[in-house]
Length: 217
Image (cartoon, rainbow, N blue to C red; front, side):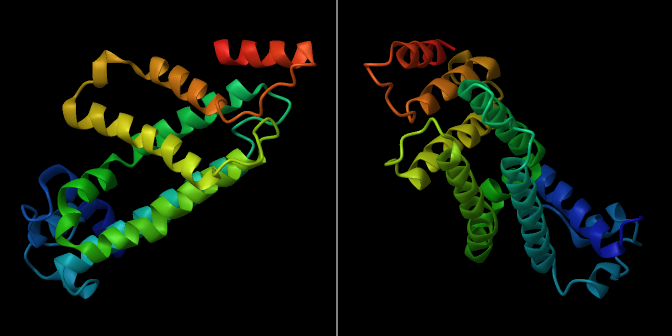
């Protein structure tokens, strides 16, 4: 199905805002990119202002990304409980890194331009970051190997924040911190997450062996 004019405006506006910045992007440029006559006012048939376009791009992308990540955390793509815990953790870390990379346009706009629009920062928090961290916390809590007395929301913000920070460092500084490539990052992320696992019963040598093997990756 062909995208509507409104949808084209949102897609092209986000791309231009990410590439050039909000202030440096003219309404006529958005119109031209969306297939409208530049400067003819076609954008204003769908939005009252350029700021309203920005608000729509942020809300639409936030909602879409939230729903996609939530579906990933609830779906079968992260393995099942019969798979080793390190494997499940590796899958979720890779999925997070992949999705953050897919949303680089939204993140660039967020970190570069949204300080001018505190209400849109609130939109991102309410529509995207809080729901995603809650979904990650729920996923962690469901894993049978993890201890039951963990502060799951805090653990989710630490683990999820590490993924976002790794992408930000690579994107903004054009190189991973300390030259640590993605696979090394994932290995360390998994080891960190394994620290949430319930301690093995010292009286069960098999359980102790499984814990040591998992920690060694």
